[in-house]
Structure formats: structure tokens, C-alpha cells
Length: 315
Image 1 (spheres, rainbow, N blue to C red):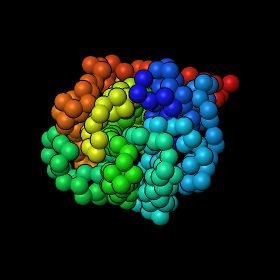
Image 2: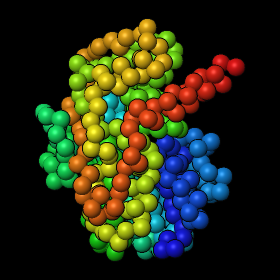
Image 3: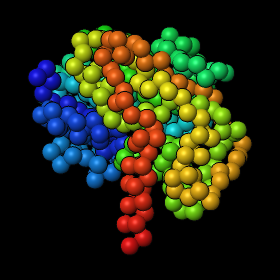
Image 4: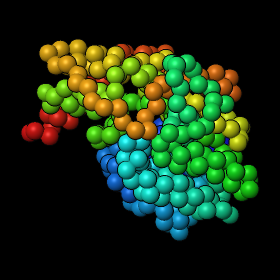
């Protein structure tokens, strides 16, 4: 196997923990660093070496890189809405945290970094058309700015340090183990409100169109990036299928509580109107292929997980 030991930053979080579990199954030794601000120890595979710590502590990160040949950099504060209010904290974690990881990689055994970027790096699109990797990078949120800057630093510094870098621009990710917050993950937010007997709150007219991609496909893209010889490239990771926020709300209301209807509130600053991935580059170069299931096929597993969590909380 090309890579034998991986560091997963943010490996107790939603996407990072799924990546860590997959790597363990592949026989790769895994080290996880997470400050548990959003992550949960329960998400970390028992076979992984877990260290509670912050990626801003570059000396700690450097110690953890001993023998590591690949880094999956997932640690970030993931919230467009929070970033507009707490832009310093957003930049400190997402940009300076990334620079801390890059500095720690200097002179290390690391051969490749897979960087978790975001659809938020793109400018807004007035029409629900597919966005390829060359679409204008003009972020409308501080979060998008920090992720784009982090991506550019990774690609640039990777060349200087002779480390292969692949940046993956995740679109709207959903799946099991996504932590509930009022700000991130519209599907999880809507499910939690409906299970509590509350109406989903739609900001704007609900006709915003999104590309919802299951975390299993995000993991697949990361593994493909690891196995590929490509370097210095960025890729969209989505499905190419668009769904409106209104359609998501209608689907979840029907599945959970048909008697509840969504309510509407003012649009939130920094959120893209349309964001649908053109994944032809990832398909062609990384051989990435979404799982062949639709959002409707996988939504029940999320509902059942949240029901179970609610039941355990009330016991």
C-alpha cells in the first residue's frame, strides 16, 4: 500500500470521522487530532490513536506527524452564518489553522495532503446551472474566503515543500453522525425541528438550489484523491443533482410529520443562491463516481438516527 500512516485533523467530526473509519478498514494506521469543539469521541474509531488538541498548536501537530505520510485536513469551523459574525474566529481556525498544519509538515515524512475545501469558494450563480472548477472564485462569505485562502496556500506551499496536494471542494454534505447546530446542515436542522414538533425555518423563498452529497461519496472522493497520482489540483465533490430547500422541507415534513408546514424568514447573508457541482473533472481524473442513490433513498437513515438520539436523550 502506498500510504501506511495518516493524520486526520478534525477526525472526531462529521466528515473526518467517516474518513478515519474508512482508512482503518483499509489497514492504514490512523492518528486523529480534534479539539472536540464540534467533534465527539464516540465518532472516533477505536483502532485510531486519538489526541485531544488544536491544530493551531503546530508543535503538537509536528509531533503527531512522526511517521505520517498522508494528511487529511478536515478540521475547520464550518458555518457560513457564524463566519459573518465571527470572522476573526473563522479566519483564525480555518486559515491560520491550515497554515499551522502546513508549517508542521515542513521537513516531515508527509508525502500528500488532501485538503477539505468548499463550494463556498465560488461566487454566487443566479441560475441553477452546474459550476465547474473554473467558475469565478469570488466568495460572498468570510467562510468561503478562509477556505479559498487555505486551498491556495495548500497548493502553493505544497509545491515548495514537495508535498502532493489535492483540494476537494465539498458541496452540501449530509449523512449519519452530523452534529446538530442551528447553523450547519439544513437536513439535520430540519429533522431536529420536526422531531421536536417545530416547523422548519426556511430563509428566503426556499427556491435556493443545492447539491446534496452523502458523506459516503465524500469519503470515496478522499480515498480516490489518496490513491491518485494527481497533484496540485482542485476538484468538486457533489452529485450534479440539484434540490431546492423547499423540496427538502416538503420531503422531510411528509416523512416525519405531515401536519407541520415550514415557515419563512429573511434571507441570511453570505449564503449562495444556487450551488450545483459539475463533477466531470473528478469523474475523469479521480475516477470518482457518486454512489448511484438519491437523497430520497438515504434520507430515512438520517431520520432514524436522529429519532434514536432523541429517544436516548429523553430516557
